[in-house]
Image (cartoon, rainbow, N blue to C red; front, top):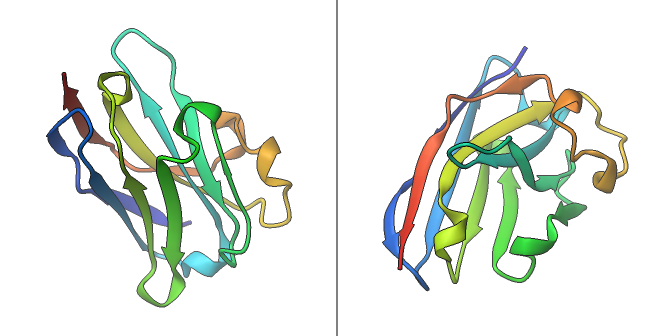
Amino acid sequence: QVQVVESGGGLVQAGGSLRLSCAASGRLLNFYTMGWFRQAPGKEREFVAVISWSGGNTYYTDSVKGRFTISRDNAKNTVYLQMNSLKPEDTAVYYCAASRYTNAIMSTMTSTQKWDSWGQGTQVTVSS
């Protein structure tokens, strides 16, 4: 089973940018669909973005479309989440996740139950 570790979180002003990284170990990432979720205080963990094992397909939750970009570098066993035009409502702990559903339709991967491995999360705080 793959292990994932997130990095790149921090404090940023509204309108700013951050890039999160997710480094994997234990298995090659090209065996996995990869995604990002986030959880704000007092709220459930919610889907943010997903990318297919090849990188050819992506899907985003509506609130981040046009602002966030998920990408992957299988040679480096790393997945990224570029976050631009950040808003205070983006404040949350961001989690990287890996799924063995490599043939799934991307839009069906929004449930946490479809994901096998999770990182410990990285805090993103956007000040107004």
